[in-house]
Length: 387
Ligand SMILES: *Cc1c(COP(=O)(O)O)cnc(C)c1O
Image (cartoon, rainbow, N blue to C red; front, side):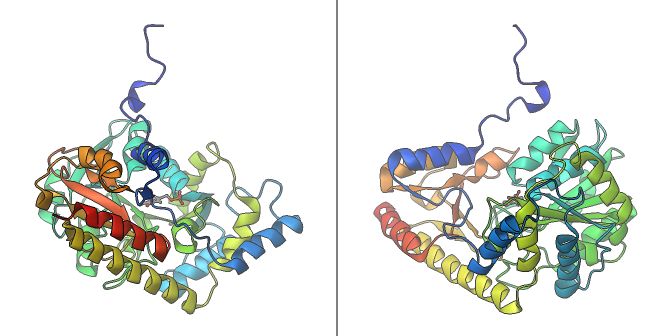
C-alpha cells in the first residue's frame, strides 16, 4: 500500500483545529473559549416544539427532499420580514444539514475542476476543504488587521478568466467584520461586470452589534446570481440540530439540490418543524439575543484588554480576534498550545485560517457565546498573563 488512503484533494486537511483545541481543553481542565458553540440551549418553547413534532410523528420518517413545507414557508417569510427579499418557498428555498452541508453542496454543484473561487482570508475552515473536494482552487482575498475591511481594488486584480465565484461571509468568522452597504454594492458591481456567481454565508446574520446585516442578495443585479446560506444553529443556539438552508433563484437552488440529494438526502426531520416556529419568534427574541451577546462581547473584550491583548473589536459574530504582539510574542499557534498551562484558557490561533502564514501569524480568537459565569472565570484566569 504505497499510496496513502487519503486522496490528494484532501491531503493537508487533517484534524480540525477545533477538535485539537477542545481535546486540549478537556485534558487540562481549561475554560474553552475555542470552539464557537453556546453553552446554554436555545428557547424552551422551541425545544418543546421539537418534542411535540417527534411525539406527533412529524418528521420521524424521511422528510421531503427540499425540506418540510412549514420550514420552507418560514424561511421565505423570514427573508421578507427582515430584508424585504422574496423567495418562492417551493422553488427557491432548500433545507440542508446545517450551513456546512449547504456550503459543500453549493461548491460541488457550481464548480468545475480548475475553477477559481475568491474567498475572504482568514477562511472558515470548511470553505477550503469544500473548494478542494470540488477540484477547484481557492484564491484568498486577505482581510488585514486592524479593521479587516476587504480591499476591493485587490479583489478586482484577483479576477481571471477562470474565476467562477466569490465566496463571501458577513458577519465574518473569525474577524467579526460586517460588510457595509457600500462594500456590498461594490462587490455586486464586480460580480455583474465579470458575470460571477456569489455564495454568501450569513449564519451570523442576527449577531450584528454595529450597523446592520446587509444581505448581498438584496443589492442590484444580485438576485439571479447569489446563493445565500444560513442556519438555525447560531441564531437559536441549537448547533446540534443541524438545520440550515439555502435561498436563491430557482436554477441555482435546483443545482444545489442535485448535489445535496446525494450527500445527506434529508436530515433533522422533527427539528425542521421546531425551527419553522423559531423563525417566527417575535422581534423581542432576536433583540434580546443580540443584546445579551453584545454585553458578553464587551465583558470579554474588556477582560482581554486588561490582560494585555490588543483587541480588534468585532462588529458582529460571537468571536473576538486579538493580537499577541503586546506580549512580545508572534506565533499564535504556539501561544494557544501553551495558554492552558499558563492560565487555564483555550483559544484558537487564526493563523490556521490563512494561506498567507504571515498575515494572521500573531492573531488569536476567543469565543464569547458562553455563560456569564464562564466568561468571568476566563477573564479572572487571563489576568495571570498581565505583566
Ligand atoms: C458555524 C458556522 C457554519 C456552520 O453552520 P452549521 O449550521 O452548524 O453547519 C458555517 N459558516 C460559519 C461562518 C460558521 O461560523
